[in-house]
Length: 291
Image 1 (cartoon, rainbow, N blue to C red):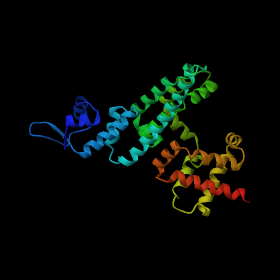
Image 2: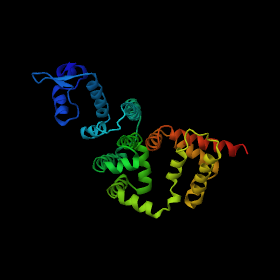
Image 3: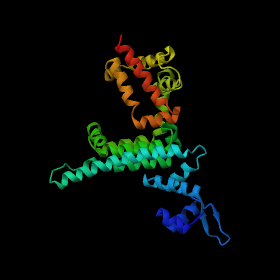
Image 4: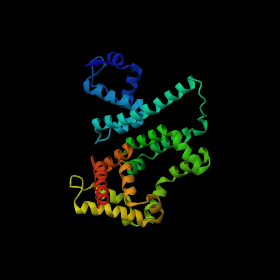
């Protein structure tokens, strides 16, 4: 057992902060002495470590508390997702350091002011806080949505370029996205109502993932892959984008090899689902290339 002052010295978290965590129920002491002093065991320290990782990723205390209180909270899985987010954050920091190095050498670099997406990112944070149930429904978990936000931060210049190309300015893009977030549930309900159930491509990928553990070469698995491809080419606008069948397969393989989509897919369909989808399409691609 460690006293609150020992925990503060060990972790760098102030005594007042630890007292506040206790007051709001985020981190309760393991027990109290007869004199009322707080004591913390190893389990409490592990929980504090988890809290500090979330804080490093700019999670709000109320969001951290909601995550830790979930009945299905998995500490190891949380560490894995935190690692993914920190890697994204580090990559962005590395690029900023490289930019500063160029500026130090006297190189002229363009202004990034016009690529500032902070207003949009703030809107995403508000959406996460105010519509948590919607976030979990469509992204699988709050952590997945935070990974999505972090990827936007990490790729901010590229996202902003696309925003300017499609909307004329970051401001117009942000306003459009804010409107979509404010009416997200309504938009999704209308979209699902207009699309026949058999045309929902996401359901087909889910069906494919349900077969994980089976041989990807099995006819029933490959028929699902073929059905997904047929669906893609049944939509004229999509078929213009995907090009040939082999290019579509490669696009799906690349798409589902993305860390973010892998996290979301595995959250919704179970661990290994994304890898199984990739392997199923890779087998189909190999088959058509060797005809």
